Length: 266
Image (cartoon, rainbow, N blue to C red; front, side, top):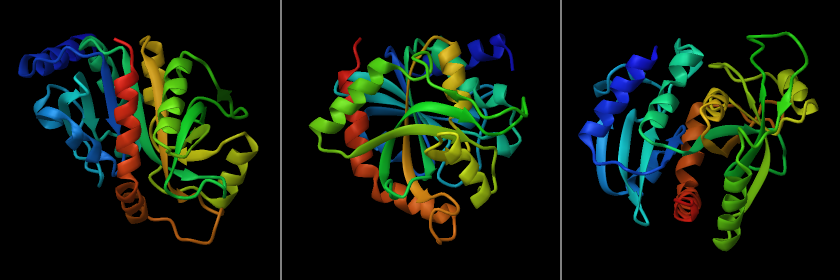
Protein backbone atom coordinates (compact mmCIF):
# COMPACT_ATOMS: atom_id res chain seq x y z
CA UNK A 1 0.00 0.00 0.00
CA UNK A 2 1.31 3.45 -0.90
CA UNK A 3 0.62 7.12 -0.33
CA UNK A 4 -1.44 7.41 -3.52
CA UNK A 5 -3.81 4.70 -2.28
CA UNK A 6 -4.09 6.38 1.13
CA UNK A 7 -4.99 9.67 -0.55
CA UNK A 8 -7.62 7.97 -2.72
CA UNK A 9 -9.19 6.32 0.35
CA UNK A 10 -9.24 9.56 2.36
CA UNK A 11 -10.66 11.57 -0.54
CA UNK A 12 -13.41 8.98 -0.99
CA UNK A 13 -14.35 9.19 2.71
CA UNK A 14 -14.42 12.99 2.68
CA UNK A 15 -16.42 13.05 -0.57
CA UNK A 16 -19.16 10.94 1.01
CA UNK A 17 -19.42 12.97 4.22
CA UNK A 18 -19.05 16.51 5.53
CA UNK A 19 -16.55 15.39 8.19
CA UNK A 20 -14.44 18.15 9.75
CA UNK A 21 -13.52 16.69 13.15
CA UNK A 22 -10.16 15.76 14.67
CA UNK A 23 -10.83 12.49 16.53
CA UNK A 24 -11.09 8.88 15.39
CA UNK A 25 -11.91 5.76 17.39
CA UNK A 26 -11.10 2.14 16.58
CA UNK A 27 -13.57 -0.28 18.16
CA UNK A 28 -12.37 -3.80 18.95
CA UNK A 29 -14.09 -7.19 19.24
CA UNK A 30 -17.70 -6.86 20.36
CA UNK A 31 -17.35 -3.14 21.14
CA UNK A 32 -19.26 -1.77 18.15
CA UNK A 33 -22.21 -0.64 20.28
CA UNK A 34 -20.64 2.76 20.82
CA UNK A 35 -21.20 3.63 17.16
CA UNK A 36 -24.96 3.74 17.83
CA UNK A 37 -24.44 6.70 20.18
CA UNK A 38 -23.43 9.01 17.34
CA UNK A 39 -25.88 11.57 16.03
CA UNK A 40 -26.44 12.07 12.28
CA UNK A 41 -24.63 8.83 11.49
CA UNK A 42 -23.19 8.10 8.07
CA UNK A 43 -22.11 4.50 7.38
CA UNK A 44 -19.38 3.54 4.92
CA UNK A 45 -18.62 -0.17 4.49
CA UNK A 46 -14.89 -0.93 4.36
CA UNK A 47 -15.53 -2.89 1.17
CA UNK A 48 -16.69 0.32 -0.56
CA UNK A 49 -13.62 2.37 0.38
CA UNK A 50 -10.74 2.10 -2.11
CA UNK A 51 -7.96 -0.20 -0.86
CA UNK A 52 -9.40 -0.38 2.67
CA UNK A 53 -8.71 -3.79 4.32
CA UNK A 54 -11.71 -5.90 5.37
CA UNK A 55 -12.14 -8.42 8.20
CA UNK A 56 -14.24 -11.56 8.55
CA UNK A 57 -13.68 -11.95 12.30
CA UNK A 58 -16.82 -12.18 14.46
CA UNK A 59 -17.49 -8.99 16.40
CA UNK A 60 -15.94 -6.71 13.76
CA UNK A 61 -18.71 -5.07 11.73
CA UNK A 62 -16.41 -3.69 9.06
CA UNK A 63 -17.57 -0.14 8.49
CA UNK A 64 -16.72 3.47 9.21
CA UNK A 65 -19.39 5.34 11.13
CA UNK A 66 -19.15 9.12 10.99
CA UNK A 67 -21.26 11.33 13.23
CA UNK A 68 -21.14 13.52 16.33
CA UNK A 69 -21.07 13.26 20.12
CA UNK A 70 -21.64 16.39 22.22
CA UNK A 71 -21.47 18.37 18.99
CA UNK A 72 -18.03 17.01 18.10
CA UNK A 73 -17.60 15.06 14.88
CA UNK A 74 -15.77 11.74 15.05
CA UNK A 75 -14.85 8.89 12.76
CA UNK A 76 -15.40 5.41 14.17
CA UNK A 77 -13.73 2.36 12.69
CA UNK A 78 -16.24 -0.32 13.66
CA UNK A 79 -13.90 -3.30 13.57
CA UNK A 80 -10.28 -3.87 12.49
CA UNK A 81 -8.12 -6.34 10.64
CA UNK A 82 -5.39 -8.47 12.21
CA UNK A 83 -2.06 -9.87 11.15
CA UNK A 84 -3.38 -13.40 11.76
CA UNK A 85 -5.85 -12.85 8.91
CA UNK A 86 -2.94 -12.71 6.49
CA UNK A 87 -2.39 -8.94 6.50
CA UNK A 88 1.04 -7.41 7.08
CA UNK A 89 1.61 -4.49 9.43
CA UNK A 90 1.44 -1.91 6.64
CA UNK A 91 -2.00 -3.20 5.64
CA UNK A 92 -3.20 -3.39 9.25
CA UNK A 93 -2.18 0.23 9.84
CA UNK A 94 -3.50 1.56 6.51
CA UNK A 95 -6.56 3.11 8.27
CA UNK A 96 -4.28 5.14 10.59
CA UNK A 97 -2.58 6.88 7.69
CA UNK A 98 -5.93 7.43 5.98
CA UNK A 99 -7.32 9.01 9.17
CA UNK A 100 -4.32 11.34 9.32
CA UNK A 101 -5.10 12.48 5.78
CA UNK A 102 -8.72 13.08 6.85
CA UNK A 103 -7.51 15.62 9.42
CA UNK A 104 -7.41 13.37 12.49
CA UNK A 105 -5.19 14.52 15.37
CA UNK A 106 -6.46 12.29 18.20
CA UNK A 107 -6.83 8.51 18.01
CA UNK A 108 -8.59 6.38 20.61
CA UNK A 109 -7.89 2.67 20.19
CA UNK A 110 -9.98 0.03 21.96
CA UNK A 111 -9.69 -3.72 22.16
CA UNK A 112 -10.83 -6.80 24.02
CA UNK A 113 -7.95 -8.38 25.92
CA UNK A 114 -7.07 -11.15 28.33
CA UNK A 115 -6.25 -10.17 31.90
CA UNK A 116 -2.99 -11.42 33.35
CA UNK A 117 -3.85 -10.26 36.86
CA UNK A 118 -6.41 -11.91 39.13
CA UNK A 119 -7.37 -8.51 40.58
CA UNK A 120 -8.50 -7.36 37.13
CA UNK A 121 -11.54 -9.53 36.54
CA UNK A 122 -13.41 -9.83 33.22
CA UNK A 123 -15.34 -6.62 32.60
CA UNK A 124 -12.54 -4.37 33.86
CA UNK A 125 -11.49 -1.40 31.71
CA UNK A 126 -7.72 -0.89 31.54
CA UNK A 127 -5.98 2.26 30.35
CA UNK A 128 -2.91 1.15 28.42
CA UNK A 129 0.18 3.07 29.54
CA UNK A 130 2.84 0.87 27.93
CA UNK A 131 3.14 -1.81 25.26
CA UNK A 132 5.30 -4.86 24.59
CA UNK A 133 5.81 -6.61 21.24
CA UNK A 134 5.62 -10.32 22.07
CA UNK A 135 5.56 -11.58 18.47
CA UNK A 136 9.33 -11.95 18.05
CA UNK A 137 8.92 -11.04 14.38
CA UNK A 138 11.86 -8.66 14.27
CA UNK A 139 14.13 -9.92 17.04
CA UNK A 140 14.84 -12.73 19.49
CA UNK A 141 15.96 -10.47 22.30
CA UNK A 142 14.29 -9.94 25.66
CA UNK A 143 10.92 -8.25 25.53
CA UNK A 144 11.01 -4.45 25.65
CA UNK A 145 8.40 -2.37 27.48
CA UNK A 146 7.76 0.93 25.71
CA UNK A 147 6.28 3.79 27.70
CA UNK A 148 6.38 7.08 25.84
CA UNK A 149 4.18 10.13 25.42
CA UNK A 150 4.63 9.63 21.68
CA UNK A 151 2.57 6.44 21.86
CA UNK A 152 0.53 6.93 25.04
CA UNK A 153 -0.58 10.55 25.34
CA UNK A 154 -0.24 11.76 28.92
CA UNK A 155 -2.86 14.41 28.18
CA UNK A 156 -5.45 11.87 26.99
CA UNK A 157 -4.60 9.42 29.79
CA UNK A 158 -5.23 12.12 32.40
CA UNK A 159 -8.48 13.04 30.67
CA UNK A 160 -9.68 9.42 30.65
CA UNK A 161 -8.84 9.01 34.34
CA UNK A 162 -10.73 12.20 35.16
CA UNK A 163 -13.79 11.07 33.16
CA UNK A 164 -13.72 7.68 34.89
CA UNK A 165 -13.69 9.30 38.34
CA UNK A 166 -16.47 11.72 37.42
CA UNK A 167 -18.68 8.90 36.13
CA UNK A 168 -17.72 6.46 38.91
CA UNK A 169 -16.27 3.99 36.42
CA UNK A 170 -13.65 1.72 37.90
CA UNK A 171 -10.59 1.53 35.67
CA UNK A 172 -7.15 0.02 36.03
CA UNK A 173 -3.97 0.82 34.13
CA UNK A 174 -1.20 -1.35 32.80
CA UNK A 175 0.91 -2.64 29.95
CA UNK A 176 -0.40 -4.41 26.86
CA UNK A 177 1.31 -7.42 25.26
CA UNK A 178 0.79 -8.05 21.56
CA UNK A 179 0.79 -11.59 20.19
CA UNK A 180 0.04 -12.68 16.64
CA UNK A 181 -2.75 -15.20 17.29
CA UNK A 182 -5.14 -16.56 16.22
CA UNK A 183 -4.56 -19.27 18.83
CA UNK A 184 -4.66 -18.21 22.46
CA UNK A 185 -1.48 -18.11 24.51
CA UNK A 186 -0.19 -20.95 26.67
CA UNK A 187 0.13 -20.64 30.47
CA UNK A 188 3.92 -20.65 30.11
CA UNK A 189 3.82 -17.76 27.66
CA UNK A 190 1.61 -15.80 30.04
CA UNK A 191 4.08 -16.41 32.88
CA UNK A 192 6.86 -15.05 30.67
CA UNK A 193 4.85 -11.97 29.67
CA UNK A 194 3.99 -11.27 33.32
CA UNK A 195 7.66 -11.50 34.29
CA UNK A 196 8.28 -8.72 31.74
CA UNK A 197 5.68 -6.38 33.30
CA UNK A 198 2.76 -7.38 31.07
CA UNK A 199 -0.76 -6.93 32.46
CA UNK A 200 -3.01 -7.72 29.48
CA UNK A 201 -2.61 -9.66 26.25
CA UNK A 202 -4.24 -9.45 22.84
CA UNK A 203 -3.85 -9.88 19.09
CA UNK A 204 -4.14 -6.30 17.84
CA UNK A 205 -3.58 -2.66 18.82
CA UNK A 206 0.22 -2.44 19.05
CA UNK A 207 0.77 -1.86 15.30
CA UNK A 208 -1.91 0.84 15.43
CA UNK A 209 -0.36 2.48 18.51
CA UNK A 210 3.09 2.62 16.94
CA UNK A 211 1.89 3.81 13.53
CA UNK A 212 -0.28 6.53 15.08
CA UNK A 213 2.66 7.68 17.18
CA UNK A 214 4.90 7.81 14.12
CA UNK A 215 2.22 9.86 12.34
CA UNK A 216 2.26 12.41 15.17
CA UNK A 217 -1.22 11.66 16.49
CA UNK A 218 -2.15 11.84 20.16
CA UNK A 219 -2.94 8.25 21.13
CA UNK A 220 -5.09 6.78 23.88
CA UNK A 221 -5.56 3.01 24.10
CA UNK A 222 -8.21 1.29 26.21
CA UNK A 223 -8.49 -2.45 26.80
CA UNK A 224 -11.68 -4.12 27.95
CA UNK A 225 -10.51 -7.20 29.82
CA UNK A 226 -12.98 -9.83 28.66
CA UNK A 227 -11.37 -12.99 30.06
CA UNK A 228 -8.51 -14.25 32.18
CA UNK A 229 -5.43 -15.20 30.17
CA UNK A 230 -4.34 -18.84 30.04
CA UNK A 231 -3.27 -20.21 33.40
CA UNK A 232 -4.71 -17.36 35.48
CA UNK A 233 -7.72 -19.53 36.26
CA UNK A 234 -9.07 -22.87 35.06
CA UNK A 235 -11.63 -21.60 32.56
CA UNK A 236 -11.35 -22.59 28.90
CA UNK A 237 -10.66 -19.61 26.63
CA UNK A 238 -13.17 -18.85 23.88
CA UNK A 239 -14.06 -16.01 21.52
CA UNK A 240 -17.70 -16.43 22.55
CA UNK A 241 -16.76 -15.37 26.10
CA UNK A 242 -14.98 -12.30 24.71
CA UNK A 243 -18.08 -11.20 22.78
CA UNK A 244 -20.42 -11.88 25.73
CA UNK A 245 -18.38 -9.89 28.26
CA UNK A 246 -17.91 -7.05 25.77
CA UNK A 247 -21.69 -6.84 25.35
CA UNK A 248 -22.28 -6.71 29.10
CA UNK A 249 -19.71 -3.94 29.53
CA UNK A 250 -20.88 -1.63 26.76
CA UNK A 251 -22.68 0.86 29.03
CA UNK A 252 -19.58 1.92 30.96
CA UNK A 253 -17.47 1.94 27.82
CA UNK A 254 -19.98 4.26 26.15
CA UNK A 255 -19.91 6.60 29.17
CA UNK A 256 -16.12 6.64 29.23
CA UNK A 257 -15.67 7.23 25.50
CA UNK A 258 -18.40 9.90 25.38
CA UNK A 259 -16.80 11.79 28.27
CA UNK A 260 -13.37 11.61 26.69
CA UNK A 261 -14.62 12.95 23.37
CA UNK A 262 -16.41 15.78 25.16
CA UNK A 263 -13.20 16.70 26.99
CA UNK A 264 -10.82 16.61 24.02
CA UNK A 265 -9.57 20.08 23.13
CA UNK A 266 -10.31 21.36 19.66
